[in-house]
Image 1 (spheres, rainbow, N blue to C red):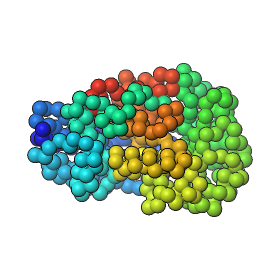
Image 2 (cartoon, rainbow, N blue to C red):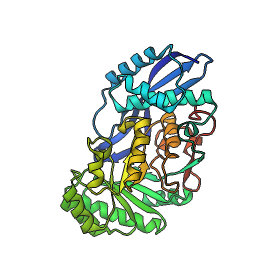
Image 3 (cartoon, one colour):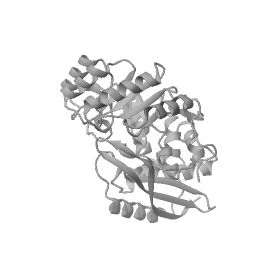
Image 4 (cartoon, rainbow, N blue to C red):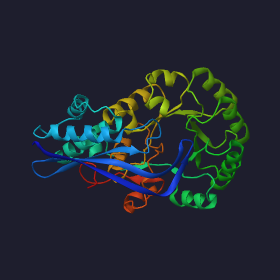
Length: 353
């Protein structure tokens, strides 16, 4: 079976409510959608995020040109039979941007899994899990905390992620404490400073908030350096998660050695599906917990991420994939959280058209 056509389209979607981070406010999601069709009309889909990027910038024009050229070059080749075939094609494609490689590997894997009559998760890693625990994302710490608590309790979430380092830290302390009280001891808080704080501020924040009920803090410091991370953990007793430092760094082993307890993996940042699976294996072997998170992908990208999340070793850990509801016109069926989990899309391939 051969690939007979490839198409790249641009989409821009408004967020239902802005997401406030230390990088700035996010109000729009922008991506490229790649479709690769086989002779029998079956199409595989992938998504490359352009905005937001959360770290670094993506040259949208270059990304579009690279994906379009690659889609054209793939016409006439046989549909890959194995994940290794997909990863080889992606390596040889010449696509430089990680979101582009993620989109290409997604579309090829989706197409191959559909032709094999299997869900993508089963085709990639023999996983049969049909749901993924997820954390709730607080878009603005200064929004209605009682409303947030109501959603979390109703959805039976076991973890909530909060962006900090957005406002003056002393003001954020009070809001975090209030939310802890409203949620109770059964819901863990995950804080994400996005590298906003110097060491003394990070320590002061947790001296005020306390470590109880905090699962971890993501990227608490301006630099992920061994001595600073050691001093932070000794002073606060709070576990540390690496996100940008791991995904965008040159030495992932050094990041773990520096004191990371949890590794946050954004597949569109680490370099695609193959790199994600390798990173999951590497971090898990080093004794780190692994959490997959989105970059606010749409239904196509999120479907891929849910399938990928089933490849992580800890079935109980919540992943940062409950973000589709942020898009104003999202498919509401895919945003339904039951018992703290999202369903892995059913059907063959990624399970979404």
